[in-house]
Every structure is written in C-alpha cells, then in structure tokens.
Image (tube, rainbow, N blue to C red):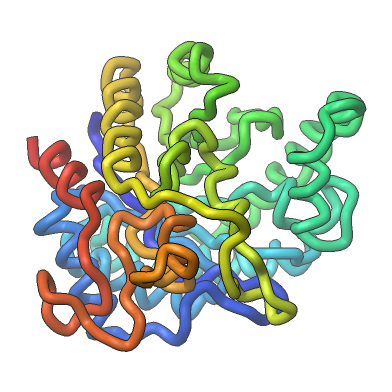
Amino acid sequence: MRGRGITYDTGFVNGGASTRGPLDPDVVRREMRVIHDDLHCTAVRVTGGDPDALELAATLAADAGLEVWFSPFTCDLTTDALLDVLADCADRAERLRGRGAEVVFVTGAELSLFTAGFLPGDVCTDRLDLLLGPRAGLGELLAGLPDRMNDFLGEAVAVVRARFGGRVTYASIPFEGVDWTPFDLVSVDLYRTAEIAEQYRGAVRGLVARGKPVAITEFGCTTHRGAAAEGARGDRMIEWGEDRMPVGLIGEHVRDEDEQAAHLLELLDVFEAEDVDTAFVVTFASYHLPHRDDPREDLDVASYGVVKVLEGRTGDTYPGLPWEPKVAFRALADRYRA
C-alpha cells in the first residue's frame, strides 16, 4: 500500500460547537511529527470546517514530511455556501502545493449526510436518524440521490480545478453512487460492520476494479467491547447536550483497546491484499471525547482516536501533549513501520 495514513481533526463544526478548540500551532507541529516519526505515516487527511485551521494543520503536516489530503468537512451548509468554502480551500491548498508539498484535494466529505438538500432533514442529525432508522422505504429515498450528488460534484470539481493543480477526489459513502469520471482517485469512507463483514473484501475489490487508485478515507472502530461489529455506529452511545457537545454516555460499556487495535490490523490486511493505494485510520485524536477513570464517564470509549485525550493534564509518553497512546497507536506504528 503506497499511502499509510491517518485522519487529523482540526474541528468539526456543528451549530457553532466544534470538536476541537482553537489550534495551538506548537501542539499541532508536535503531533504531526509524532504522526510522521513515531506512527510512521506517510500521509495525513486533515479534516474540519474552518479553512484557517485546515491551512495551519496542512502546512505543519507538509513541514513534517507528510503527504497532505486537504479535506474540508463541513456541516449543514447549503450547496452554494459549500462551493464558496471549497473555492477558498482550493486556493489555500494550491498555495501549499506551490511550496513543493504533495497535496491531494478532497472535494468535501459525506455530503449527502452533512450538506443540506441531498436528503430530507433540516440538520445532519435528522438525516443520520433517517439513514440509521427503519430500513423500509430507504431504497426509494436513496433512488434519486446519485443524480443529485453527481450534478453537484461536477460543479464542485470545476470550481476546485480552476484553482488547484494537484490530484482531486471526494470522500464518499458507498450509497451515494458517485460517478468517479471527473476525479483522479476513488475515495470511500468504508467501515466494516457485522452485517456486511462477509461482503467487505469483495466491496474493496470492486472499488479497485474501477481502474483508478483507491483510497479508503475512513476506517476503524471505537474503543469499547463490541465496537468492531458496529463500525461507523460505534459512537451512538454519546449523550449530547443542547450545546451539541457530549455530556455523557448512554448505557454501560466495557473499555477495550485491544479490540480496536485488532480491527485496524485486520482491515489493513484486506486493503493490502486488494491493492488499495492509500488508507486513513480514523482518527488520531478526538479532543471532544476525553478519557476518564470512571467507566461511567469515560467518553473515550466512544472515540475512534488512537490516542486517549486527558482532561486538565498532559501525558507521560510525550510530555507536554494532552494525551496518551492507546494499544491501537502502538499496533499501527508497528504495522506502518514494517
């Protein structure tokens, strides 16, 4: 596999609430060095909704020697507003590329869920509930989605290519039915769940058979027992406050770092065997889901991060940084180094 990657969240912004506070350049710089030197990544997908934060993290990632996937990840914008963000970010990505960095531009992420107008629902939680709810009628609901998606993506690619001279892709969900003709790479957020486990390898093989390089832009699981079977649903136990920030957990959950690590390695086996070009573990750190000693309050069990974020203190392994590596961190480091 050419690209050994991980995602890096600069702040997913939902209704004014962000999964990460203002970025400290010194912290980001050190984290990018850890990603390159200790995790042995060759690529990082920098995600988030604030173009300034994206550019800061992308620049520091390039300085660390990483291939940068510049990936605006917005929430509940209109398509017109999203086009403005993509244009702005494409200009920023091109400036970085002009400095000699290897940059791939990701033309949005999971737009059917996180952009207004593709599926019914005023806000993203409405659309997510629709998708994860009763399956009856879902096929009819999704039938017209590919046409709507591809009409917009064609317009978005034209906006990006007018400003950016590097490779272009889009972080898709399989049911969106993306036409990959205008893109340089096929990119899919591809989580494995118990329901699709037997078909998962075949799905990866089908993507590669399209003839373009394939990137798995998200894969992984959260950090509790049984999470590997849940895939992208592994954080559904979070209780959210009115400010759209996590306040606790629903139910009881057993912390299991070993299961998370084993799941990552199993999927990397699949990607390597099926000739995937690049894969991005989701994610480096979930700053909005800190680890706590009390299992009833340990939000990190709902985190996809390979490090556990600490509250009010820094760690011992990397003094001055507010997290400690999980088992998945060490397993991934060993795998990527090899």
